[in-house]
Image (tube, rainbow, N blue to C red; front, top):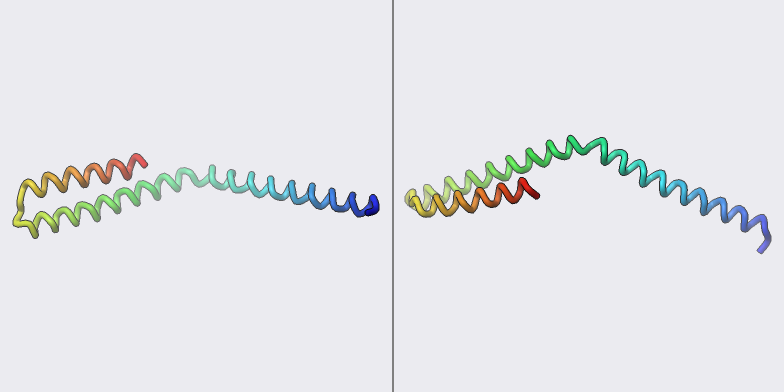
Length: 88
């Protein structure tokens, strides 16, 4: 192999290395810029899941002849689900 070909290969690898790191930095910069939006979307998804859980609890309570023990159990389970979802 001659020395000019090796120099061109070295330059190509160095350029690929720079492009890789520039891409990584750009991804992290974009991620840092969108953190507030991600928190807002996460909060909306928690409220959406809470609404679905509340609807299912209400329907089960109505189907089970409005049994208070079932309502208490399902409300406790629903609260645990929503709190776990919010913490995660």
